[in-house]
Amino acid sequence: MRDRVVIEVWDGWVRLFHWGLVTAVLVSFYTTKTSGAPFLFPVEVHAQAGYLVIGLLVFRWLWGALGSVYARFNTFLYPPTETVAYSRSLLKRQPSAYASHNPLGGWMVLLMLLSLSFQAVSGLFLSDDIFFQAPLYGFFGDEVGSQLRTLHQLNSDLLIILIGLHLAGLIVHSLMGESLIAAMLVGAKRFCQQPVDARKESLSSTLLRLRAIGALLVAAGVVLWLWF
Image (cartoon, rainbow, N blue to C red; front, top):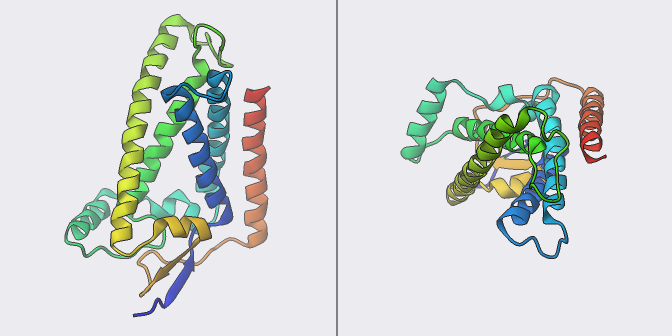
């Protein structure tokens, strides 16, 4: 059966955020989990990647409240009863089609955003005790700083697990005929029937553009303050 429904799900801002975040996180992990070659000072590159992550996250949190319909958190965060029902249907290989994130995917997105936010913000209070001190190093004193260092390291491991689960989810959906990677590249998803969460955009393109510019300015201001 041919695809009959094409829905523009991920706007350009969400896609830029997503792939920008992927790049920044990869650089961040690379500069801590390896020797960091060919960078002369991997810790500084790690910090700069972290600043970019913070800027991207600031934009995404704002866009999740003010952005296009499928980018908004209230579109894809479902109550526990619906999440459990979807999980059961998924185990039976009879899940409903969703334009935005399905109930499980929505909560996974929120969990990853929270974990990434903690990771990036906690890094602002750390130092490598040799060459580098983050902008807010020493702000809470040595004891809290030491605790943040430990939590920063533990959360790094949690992020690897979450990213692994995210990739596993992509594979599962691909096997079920839903190419989420392609959708995040082009912005559109194709369905044989109307998805259960299909809805029209309630905001004008002009208002969305103004909101996006405002969110970008806030995010850019945060990054510039941290960088310089």
